Amino acid sequence: MILHFTNTIIDDIEQLIHDGVDAGSPIINDYLAKHLIIAFSSEVEKHLKILLETKIKTLPDGQIFKYCRMCNKIRNPKYKDIKSFFKDLNIQLPDLTDDQKTIYTNVIKNRDSIAHDIQSTVNYTFPQIKKAVNVAEIILESP
Image (cartoon, rainbow, N blue to C red; front, side, top):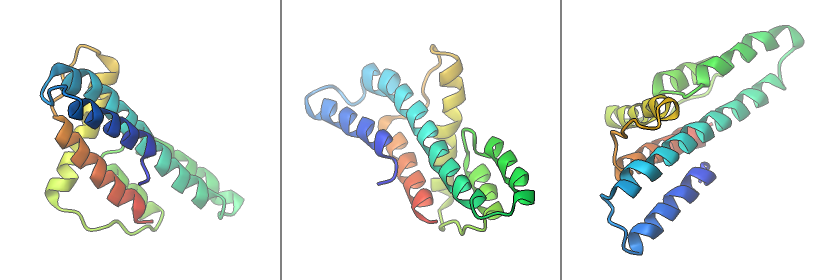
């Protein structure tokens, strides 16, 4: 489990559901889901930056700037961004289905609207967000 903070939030939400909070309630699928998506995106970005830092430490001085510019590529990273980032770092991506790529990207896309408009709605349910987190774990465990 790489996404420790994200998975802690998932565990807390699952505990609430276990304790009797309706899984379809607004507290789960709106309020907590928003926090989960923002934490999820942030934690994925953090782990990608760790990969970049590791790469930079092995480079001669003249090549470092090229890689520093890659930080913009991994801000709220959709699947295509990660694919390009991994290619630039010579990291092999695991095989994913189109559905996995789509659910991951679509959940991450929600981050921007949530972060900039608290009144925005979350278009994904808690189980769908968990699927996106599982996809991110697969991706981040591959290097």
